[in-house]
Length: 307
Image 1 (tube, rainbow, N blue to C red):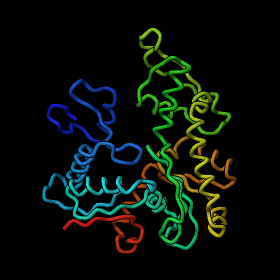
Image 2 (cartoon, helix red, strand yellow):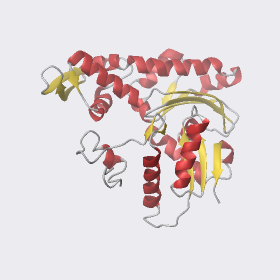
Image 3 (cartoon, rainbow, N blue to C red):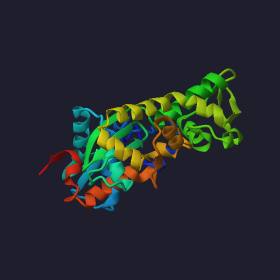
Image 4 (cartoon, helix red, strand yellow):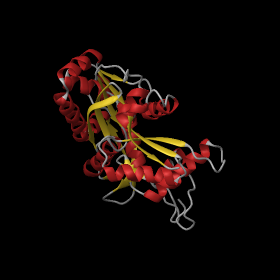
């Protein structure tokens, strides 16, 4: 955003490249944090931008919008999402719980009377849900996910190596050498990290290895594993039997963390699969619901009508 003009300069991937690298009058903002709206006006501008982009700049378009939200959000947060979408120009706003959207996107048979377990690890929240017959039987949402994993790497680098690194660098480390479960190859993974040295205040390069990054992420990962165990404990026996047969499905960007499926399998004793395209599961599922609106109408968790 340009602070003086209050206009968006870049959105999405282009804006992400600017994180931590903007001049004084330009700020890189994240209107959504922990799966909910953190900055209402900016969220509205972002939605307007997306609507314009889809409709190639045509004005006077009033689309029907389906938005995926974390299952654990409050009523106020739901209202905020609906309000932002309707002010951005939506005709109808429907909300869908992210685990349901992720399961549809991952190709799970959500319409059948069988138990499906999905773990959706996004940026701000991890959603663990057991689904059956187009609905959520039980779910748990914890606000520990990709952002917390990156944050734990930032803290580790500061504590152990006296190195201050930015949000993007932490994410880069997580993607390159981060892992959730020890393997033989881990010890070979190493990476050069550049940042500001705390003691001298000068730029410095430090070499780090895979196992230390895994160690730094162990705390947020254990929170995610505990949420999975708690959900399994509460699952009705018939559905639990289905889950043992079919396994657990991992979706969301966090599912790409090396060895996460092995960690969850090891901790729960249930086979864990990673979806074919984990990053896009939620958005593909949301799109599929929009296309097959009549058949899948029961999956919505909230709606608003503006006529």
